[in-house]
Every structure is written in C-alpha cells, then in structure tokens.
Length: 471
Image 1 (spheres, one colour):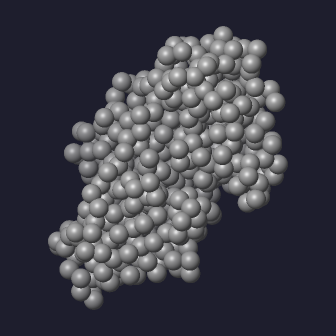
Image 2 (cartoon, one colour):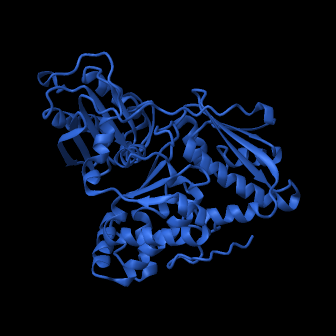
Image 3 (cartoon, rainbow, N blue to C red):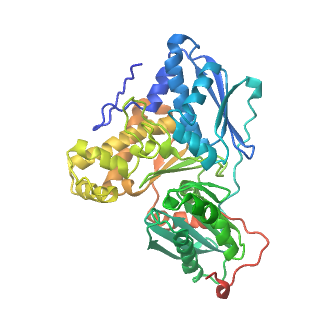
C-alpha cells in the first residue's frame, strides 16, 4: 500500500505515519465490524470498535498488519491480560500466535502477562455477544489540596520533592541519585525515605503523601519500573513490589498514593489550565504520557506510549527494550535527538551519553545552527502526524508538551512544525486541539503539587514532626 506523505520530516523522508497508513487502509472500503476487548484481572474492561476490509485472501496481510498495530497500541495505552476479538476469527488466531511466548511479540506477552497483571496474556476469538460491556473506571485521585502534604517524583537522575500546605509550596528540592543499576533495594528504599524526610522537616505535620515515578503501577504497587532494573527478581518481589506500602507503614499509614509520572504530568497541566481532556507528553529520557479525561479524572490505563507504534514502515528504528519497530520512544525523546544528529551532519563520539548529546544540540540551536534546527523540525513533523494518531484513541482538547527535548528554541520549532502538519492535513483536529507548554511556575512546582494532591484525606492520625520516620 502506497502512502503519500505530503509533509515529510526533513531528516527522515521514509517515515510512514501511523495516522496516514490507517486512514489509507480504511479508505479501501473497510466495512466489516470488529470488536477488541481488553480485560484486566480486576474486571475492568476497555472495548475498541474497528472496521476492516472484507476477509479475503488478498486482504489478509493488510488486515493483519492493521489489527496487530492497533492491538499493540491498545495494550500499551489501556493495558489488559485477556484480549477478546470478535468479527475476524482467522486474524484473531494469528494475533494469538504473534503475541505468544514463541511469537514476534513475546516481549509483550511476558510484559502484560506475569510482569504487569500476574497472569498469562491470552488472545481469543469470540462472538460479538461475548464482548463485555466497557467499564473503564476513572480514579478519584488528585485535586485534593487540603492539609499538609508531601509530593515527590522519582526520576532516573534525581529525586524531586515538595512540601505543600493547602496547595501552596513551602519547600522543594532535587537530590541526585543513580537508581538504574543499583542492585541493593535498600538504596531505593532509604533514598525515597530520605526525600520524604527532607520535605517533612518543613511541615508542622504530614497529612498525606503522593508520588509519581516512571513505570507501571497498579494501585500503588510496582509492577514494572526501570528505576529498579538492577534489582534481582527475588529482591524485587520481597523488597520492591510493595515498597510504597512499606513506606506508608513507616509514615503512620497516612493516605499514600503513587502513580505513573505521565499521569501526574497531565494532572498538573489540567489543574494549572483548569481544563480537562488533556494529553500530556514529556520528551526526556523516554516518552512519558498521561491523560486526564473530559470529566477531569485519571484512569487505570497504562498510557505507556513510548512503546506504542507511530511509524509503520518495515525498517523503522527498533526500540532497544522490546525490539519492536517504529515505537514512540525513538521519535519523542533524547534517543530521537541522538538518532537524528548524524542525519543532520552532527557527529558525536560513539560513547557520548544521550543527555550530553542533547545538551550539545541545544547549544547549537541557541547559536542558530541550521543542522540542529532540522532535528527539531523533524521531531515536530513526527509529532503533528502522531497527535492525529493519538486522537484516534483519546478525546484531546489540550496537548501538553514538556521535557528536556522541548526546552528552549527547539521546543518552539517542534510546536510550529506539529501545527503545520495539523493545519494542512488534519484541519478538524487543528481546530479542536491546542498545543501548550507549561509556564515557569508549573515547571518548577506543578508536578509536585499535583503529586501531593493525589490522596484524599481520611480518618487517621497525622504524623507530627517528632514522629517523622527515620528507621
């Protein structure tokens, strides 16, 4: 299938946007209804309705490609460990083989099976009347500003914290740490507890604690998180999986909630702008995404779009973690900058870390270097097409952009090019979706305040300063 990419990324002319590929597939006469249900162990369920081409031999390869990429996106967006497919039994069987322990997506089989939902991933064909009713639940987390609260954010290079009294930040700081390859789980436990103590020392009492961190969390339980990649599986089970429950006990069992950092980013933007239907996208070490619904809530969805496909070409860049091609992390992160630098004519030593390469590119763009400008232009073009793709799965009114890659003049170029693509090719979305960036106040404190606002106060005894956990 030939895809006419009218506006091509300057440094990546072979890019095949998912939004255009899907639209071209559907335009061939897709009329056969298909339902895909993703069910989680707690009984919550998401349902995606699609149309496919008539199920003939000549259409099978395209239809399998279409539904496999859709399913991949849905898994990383919504999560689930039981997938029910109605309307195309032969394709469902092929999907089950692809997402099996021996299949091409065996990484996803393991991730969504025993790692995330603690039971095997299953993909099964079924009748339409066996598709359950969707019952996605919004989580009543966030926007609680009463009392004395601690908010924290755990990143790969620093721990951020803030002390908040009735929504006002009275203290905040960043502390460097290096958790990725630390094998001793006590390093993580005591590091996080130290951050809590630092914030608590600026409060008369502690009423609640809320936090954010990269990774997959289910009801504050760690399921998969790169921060703990150096910890052995045995120590992960005994010391890490319920790390925040252990810390909650240390802190007198005050309300204590932890969610993915992307969700807190979107929540912070929603609170600041007093707007809902916000999709937040942070371009940093990876691509972090979070979503606030039109009703103003966050959901149990994963929103791990770093590993969802946005480029459908056959030889797209590979994600080093999952091995899949064309996933968002290669287009909206420091990795994207490093990947595009050679194409722009900028050569860095092979062993230079991605953060340092980004710093050098930012210096070049500040000096007016056209090579650096092409990197940001390319990312912006990627983004315009990808916003249109994301809009097929989310109701978006505000697209909140942040992260180190969007800092400075480069960020302005990214937004300009993304808007150019939307205006030219997706005018209805251009009118509906506003691309925004946080102001300086929100950059400094917004995420900490949003994290601190996660728990709702209940019946408990607040922790006085002399009781702050030190053991």
